[in-house]
Each structure stands twice: as C-alpha cells, then as structure tokens.
Image 1 (tube, helix red, strand yellow):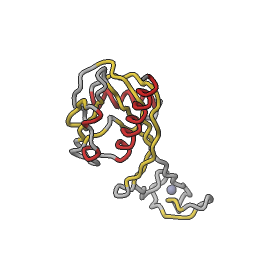
Image 2 (cartoon, rainbow, N blue to C red; image 1 turned 30 degrees about the vertical axis):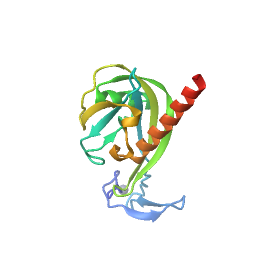
Image 3 (cartoon, rainbow, N blue to C red; image 1 turned 90 degrees about the vertical axis):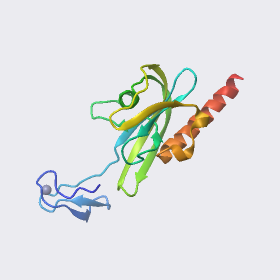
Image 4 (cartoon, rainbow, N blue to C red; image 1 turned 120 degrees about the vertical axis):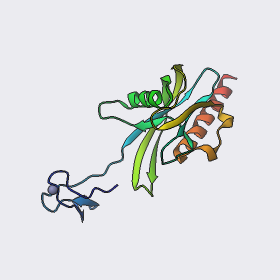
Length: 176
Ligand SMILES: [Zn+2]
C-alpha cells in the first residue's frame, strides 16, 4: 500500500524520481523520501512423529477458507527463527523445534499492492495439541499425499511443500 502523507510533517506525498532514479513517494514540504521495502514473514513445515504436516485453515483474506502453513510477520525484536516458532505456536497451539532452513521466497500480491519475503524452516512438533489461533479457524495434521494444490491459499506454500517433498524423497533414497 502506497502511503499518502508524510510521516515527518503530515504533508501530502508526491511521486518523484529520486537520487537512485526510482520513482518514490517524496514529501515536497520537508524532503522526506519513503523507501518501501518488503516485510519478512517466517513460518514452518512442521511434522509430528508419524510424518504428518500441520496446516491451518485461514479465517481471513487473503486465502479465507483455504489452508496454509503457519506463517506470519516478524516483530522488530525477534530473530527469524523466533518468529517462525512463535507464529506456529500462535496459529496451531504447537511447540516446534526447527530442523533447518527450507528456503526463502519472494512474493507479490498484485491486487493488494503488497510484497514480502517468506522464510520457511523444516520443524518437528515437540509439544502441544492442535487448536485454532486468532486468525485461523482450524489447525489439522495432513499426510503429504492428502495435501492438494487446490486446497492451499498461496503459491509460495505449494512450492515449499513440493520442495520439502523432494528433499524427503532424496533423504529416503540416501538412507535406503
Ligand atoms: Zn514532510
């Protein structure tokens, strides 16, 4: 979302070409330049002992009525790992231990004029019982084979689950 007013003096902002040759919102009164940078979201693909993955049913848009991985935006005083564990606990009621970085995705919501970076970790459930969180309707475990593209809210989550599946296949081959 483009800001309309200067955070320094409250004047209306104008779109101007600035020093680095990009068009940015600029305050004509005090010269404040707005740099719009993508926020960072963190989350997990968390499995329990039987290999099933926890997903959350989304109660809010985007993706209302569809399933997603537990993810959310980092707070200013957190590490990415802290944010991933906290979001999982808030959205599913489950405590997890991170097992490693799965990947980093850039995403764009054209209709919302927003963008972000999603960092996902592989994780193992170590405590708690699944329950819905503040912006989720349900938290439920699924076998990987039960999760279809159509039931997922976000392209990044589809991609991440496919990548996770390939990684697991490789590990299974490595052991066998
Ligand atoms: Zn200003």
